Amino acid sequence: MMKNVLIIGCGLLGSSLLRKIIKKKIAKKVFVFEKLKKNITKIKKLKLPCVIVKKLEDAVSKSDLIIFCTPMSEYKKIILKINKYLMPRQIITDVGSSKLKSAAIIKKNLKKKIFWTSSHPIAGSEVSGPEHGKENLFENKWCILIKDKKTNSIHLKKLNSFWKKIGSKTTFMDSEKHDKIFSITSHLPHLIAYNLVKSAQDFEKKQKYDLIKYSAGGLRDFSRIAASNEIMWRDIFFDNRKNVSKAIDLFIKNLKEFKNDINSKKNKSILNKLSQTKKVRSKIIKLKQDTNKPDFGRN
Amino acid sequence: MMKNVLIIGCGLLGSSLLRKIIKKKIAKKVFVFEKLKKNITKIKKLKLPCVIVKKLEDAVSKSDLIIFCTPMSEYKKIILKINKYLMPRQIITDVGSSKLKSAAIIKKNLKKKIFWTSSHPIAGSEVSGPEHGKENLFENKWCILIKDKKTNSIHLKKLNSFWKKIGSKTTFMDSEKHDKIFSITSHLPHLIAYNLVKSAQDFEKKQKYDLIKYSAGGLRDFSRIAASNEIMWRDIFFDNRKNVSKAIDLFIKNLKEFKNDINSKKNKSILNKLSQTKKVRSKIIKLKQDTNKPDFGRN
Image (cartoon, rainbow over the protein chains, first blue to last red):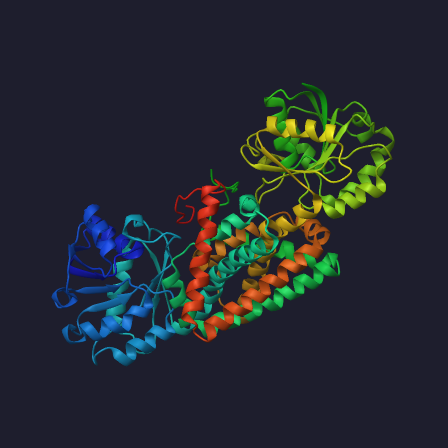
């Protein structure tokens, strides 16, 4: 059992970690640093089992594990603030969704001889804030642990054991591979959802049709995804822009082919496209990333 | 209470209608014509309360209401087969998802003095087949009734009353408006989902990364939508290709702007885009097209 954990940023992910750490007795005490007053009020009201610290410095030197759960654009500022209190034995990690860019920021700003071991739990929701956190958020979900050339292998081992206690399935990959994979499985889907909803808004304005009320035919599901936190997603899109940009190009290329199939009524080609995608679905269900329970919309 | 209803095509929608019609005693008897042997076997095994007819002609002249629940590409062939048995008093309708093109096919092929009154219930799922049908599929869902210049107003009134008994909320619009609205709220979202899954497949092949197992970060939800019936969606994309094509153009234009914002790190512009879309989400929830219950993935 660890003695103290410090969670920096106590929103959906931070508060879920906090709940699980205490529930499973992974650490004796959890310090929480949270910038937003409205979140502090919520944490107090919810009586989350933690010590809220007003100054980061107070908690840093007392903690065995420090977890960054803030938007990635906050990392630099916080690192510069806590640098002098950090010790080589401390496990420092984050839960950010893109890795190459933050690795560069960390490398540039983190004090020498201090180790950062990055993680990315594939868990979340379209809602944010500590009131939506839940202790089983990470249960049976993947957590990617980043293993780059300079990763400290002892810290990595300890962090792996931490995430397993949290309930996650863990796997290792380097930052570059991580950012490529998630540009396709997560970043592009979110961008596409935002873009679809924006296109519907533009269309509604232009046509003056009241179309949102007929959104049950597909738009609805995208609008949920496009309700995710804008600061978090801006940071992801900016940080992983090289891969996201390539993913957009591939998507547009394929979409133009689809359009061509439709306009030229290419029967064989379109049926091939529309049925091939079922294979991915089968695989997703086989890998237990979703259930095969039919979805008829939520009532 | 009607005497007899004929359902042509007994898949997800046809079998759901059948179940509800009998449950609510909307008609005494339901005739079912189904082309696929595997579906007939399922209907018999499920003991669905209907009379399966082997020849359409047998049931057509006996029915007060005839509902086409087949893919739209089947309409012409069926119309030509049943034309001579049709009578002006009969209500003939369909549940197809695009209207302009099928209206033209109907106009060209349907016997003179026979009326077709088209409907489009906004209900469905990614699964198909009679085993997935359910009596409450249409409950509180919109059903669009098509009111064009030549629509028979008595038939329209009767059909409206039918759908209300089925449990739907009804509304009226012309084919042109219908096809424009649903090109954005339904056809484009499905096309985008298919295209996203295809892009992920292409990427996986090229990079030789095993990425499907990390699909919980967004791709998963699109893969569900992209598992919908390929014949039905081919017909929709082909029939409504004029509007779908325009919708694709608008989507690509917006996506390129997004890409530009990301590559040039245009902070204000991207935050504006990412937060504006929340308004659509609020509206969808207010209009009860979805719940505001957070989604953490389905276990």
